[in-house]
Image (cartoon, rainbow, N blue to C red; front, side, top):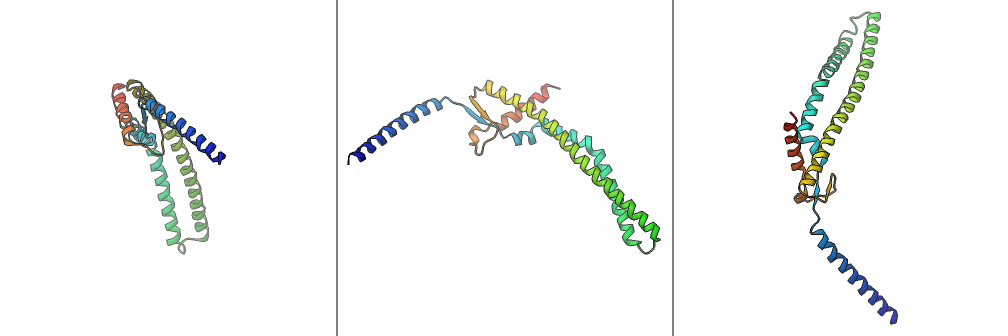
Length: 178
């Protein structure tokens, strides 16, 4: 019976300590200001991100058109081979097949290089936007006296989401830098 009384006493002491810690923690937490930023949204919707995306599209449009032109050539040649298979001599048919094969190899190379270069450029531009976003977040944190700002969270209460402030700050900053 004595063991049960000791366990009950230990449990009461643990609960008292826990209650004291919780009450002390909530007193401190009342002064603690937290914000959360949706980085993906900033990289998708902010003015610098949108401008970077347009810049990249313009930069790569020529290569994209070249790839589309090569794809059309390959498609037309494939159609010619299927349509006029009996009308071509054996040598012409082999030459056209080799030409189609070379076009396809070239097209695959062009597409692979395009994807790699596009990915590299996007990463470069997004790094610049992210750096500017981090500066904007730091500016907001300092001016509004935040104790902690997280850039990613599994869950965020809309009351502490400051993504819109960051996007507006970046738009204002972009306008100032012109």
